[in-house]
Length: 248
Length: 307
Image (cartoon, rainbow over all chains, first blue to last red; front, side, top):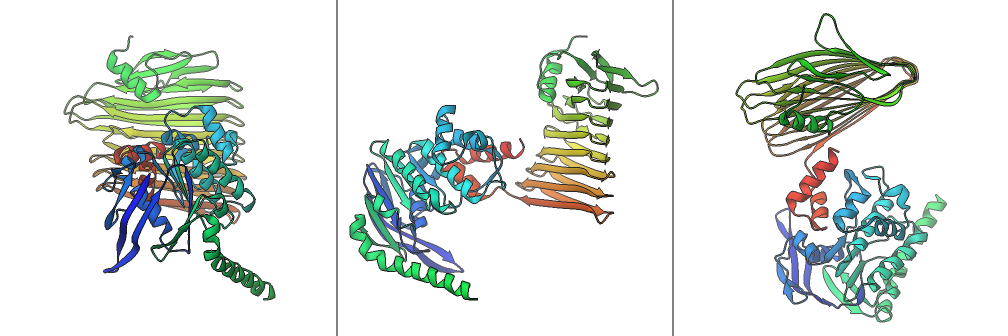
C-alpha cells in the first residue's frame, strides 16, 4: 500500500511562496489500477513526482508498505519498487533503447526486451539499437519510456500522460498493454495520469485533482457525472476552435 | 622483439589487443620499428630520408586491416614521425592507428605524428586513431597529431579520432580535401580532466561537385581542463557539408567551439549545430528513477555521449 499523508508542496515563485499541492491525503491499494485526472496545472504530475521523490514535500509523509519513505532519494525509491514514466522523457545522445532497457532491468534477456518493445507498438529489429537522441519523435520516445517501466516489473508504476504525443489509433492498445502488465503482477499498484476520458472506465479508481487538491475519489461511474460537464465543455471549445478556423 | 607488460597494456588501450595481431602491422616504440609485417595486399616500407612508413594498399583489396600503433615508454622522449597511407582504387580497408605514452618520470614525453592519407577513386577507408596516456610521473604526456587526407572521386573515408584518458596537452590539426562525389566523415571524441588542454583544428575543403562531408565532435571537459574546437567546412562547388559539435562541461572547465562555414559557390549547402552545456538535471533524475545513484547516472551519460 502507498499512502500520501497530509502532503503539501510549495515552491518559491519570484520570492513568493506558491502552493502546488494542498492537503493531499490518499491511499493507493495493491491490485488496483488508478487514474489521476483533472485540469492542466492542477497538480497531477506534482503528485507523481512527490511519490517518485523528484519533489520533496514541504510537509507531510509518504509510506510504502508501512515504511516511511519521505526522506528517501529518487534512486532509493526506485530500489524500493517505485517507477515513473515521465510525461516528457529526456533524450540521451549515444545511449540506445537497449542500453536504457538494461539500466531499467539489468537482468532482462533479449527475448523479453524484444517483447517489451513489441508490446508498446515498436519493431524491436528497428528500435533496439536506435540512439535516444533527437532523431526519435516525441511519440517514439513516449513508447520507449513506457517500455522501460513495463520492463521493470515494479510494485508501483506511474505513467504520466501515456497518451501524450502518441497517435490516436494506438492509445487504447497502449493502455491495454499497461493494464495487462499490471494484472500480471500481484500486489502491484498502477497509476495513470490522463486527460483521456476513454481511459477512465478501464480503471478501478479515479482521482480528480484540481488547484492542488484532491476534489474527488471514486469508481469511474461515480466520478464520471462529476467531470463529464467539464470534459464536454472542453470538447465544445475544441470544436468551436475548429469551426472558427475553417471559416477564416 | 618481444613486447613487455607495459607495452602490452598500452597496446590494449590504444588498439584493444594485448597480442600482436595478424596481417599488416607496424609497431613503433620509442622511435624505432619493433615489429613490421606486410601482407600480400598491404605493403609497409620506410621513407629513405625521414622517420616513418609508407603503407600501400593494393587496388581492389577488400575487408583487410592494417595496424600501426606507436608506443612511447622512454621518459622525456620526443617522437617525430611521418606516415603516408595510400588506399588503392576500389579497396576497402580499416587502418588502426593510435599512440600510447607511458611516463613515470618528471620529464615530458611527446608524440608528433603527421599522417598523410590518400583514398583513391572508389575506395573506402575507415581510420581509427586512439590516443592514451598513463604513468605515475609528473612529466607531461603530449600529442600533436597532424592529418592531411584527400578523398578522391567516389571514395568514402571515415576518420574516428578518440582521446579519453591521460593526455595532458594536445594540438590536433586535420586538413581534408574531398573530390567529386567523395564522402568524408570526421568524428572526434574527447575527454579532458584535471588541468589538461586540448585543441583541435579541422578544415575540410569540398572541392568536387557532389562531394559531401561532415564533422562530428563530442567532448566532455571536467575539472579545470580547457578545450578549443575549431571546425571549418569550405564548399567550393555544389556540395553538402555539416558540422556538429556537442560538448558537456563540468566543474570549472572551459570549452570554446568555433564552427565556421565558408561557401564559395551558390550551390554549396553547409550547415552547423553547436551546443555546450552541463548534464541536464532531467537526464540525471531519469536514470536515478531507474535505480542508478548520481555518480552512476553521470558516468552512464558520459560513457554514452562519448561512445
